[in-house]
Length: 301
Image 1 (cartoon, rainbow, N blue to C red):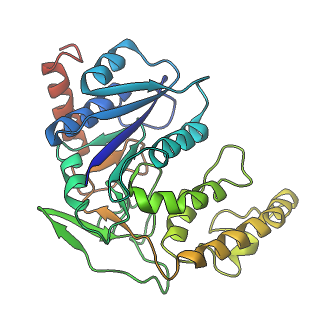
Image 2 (spheres, one colour):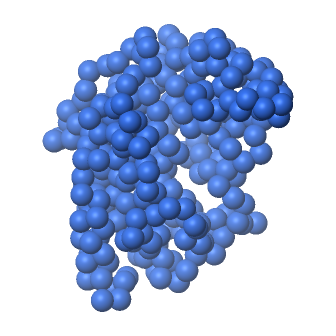
């Protein structure tokens, strides 16, 4: 078994609500440090030009590929990364981790991936994701709850790391190559009929063999998705056949679900205010990461 790392990078810093320490160079440095500590090289997948300071770090800790014709945008770069993995000669029992460029990782994050890779029941893994006891109260004001009827599985303890069976995560995640190759049509189907969106949550639910929508949600969509306006009703009606098709697709995995587990507490942080999960002092980790980057000459003192 081998762990592979694909890191999607974009040129700008973008304007989301970020913690004060945020920079894409700092996030990349945290990932490079984690990869180095685990003895794994990174495949840096650049969507268009990136600043020279980041490129210098990329070249030291892995190989760099620039997407032809870029920048192509978030969704097309995501598809490029998925196809890079599934069309590779990597073995089906290998693990590949896809990382976006606005995540901060702990120094042992990639070591955790290598540890959980040895557990065959894990088809997908998240280093960032809400779990019981570690969910952002802004997103989960009443705490993290599994959907009614969700078949939870026992926690996994491996090499000092704990992983919890969860419902979903974002598009920074790890995947067993065999599962990803089998489930790739789900990822593509969950992009329809949208031009730029992809349905992370529904994708995770479907590959685990569960229904992504309740009967009424085929009409309204997930909670907070329905708009009680003429335009909202028309949109909901238009999406009904696509939602029904996703539910039907989920049944193909029902007998052999590909399970998703998340590190608890998280070993990665989506650096966007409002979705940063508790359980670690991310501000202190950012300070420590910056000190490492200064010491290695990637950030000025």
